[in-house]
Figure 1 (tube, rainbow, N blue to C red):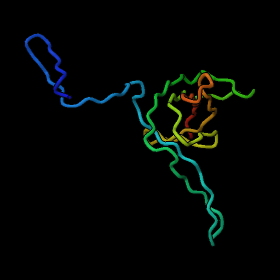
Figure 2: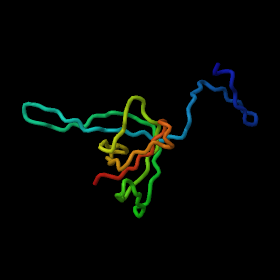
Figure 3: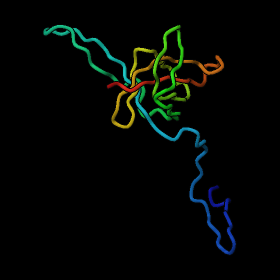
Figure 4: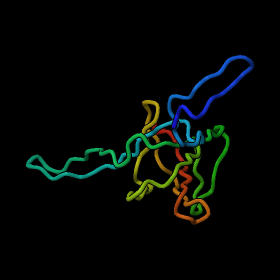
Length: 127
């Protein structure tokens, strides 16, 4: 099946070795972390756990002067993360995003056009 497709440029022909059906909209991968509280003999401890690993997404970085108004509180944001809604997982404001060896707080999670497919997540860097 893969040999049925050939790309020809001038006198050069290239035969495809494999076909992967995907879109190139999401160009980075990030992790979503959720703090879980564990009771032990030494008391209660907080342990971060990956709820989504290698989630394909796209981040639109904002300049430091931009602010977004959510729930009548103004948050200075670092970016807006766009991704598909992970199956079986609900991302909430108490979760964190781990990308490029840095942690980001979630300021707001919005279901894009209320379709249950795409998410817009407002993030700010944890300092």
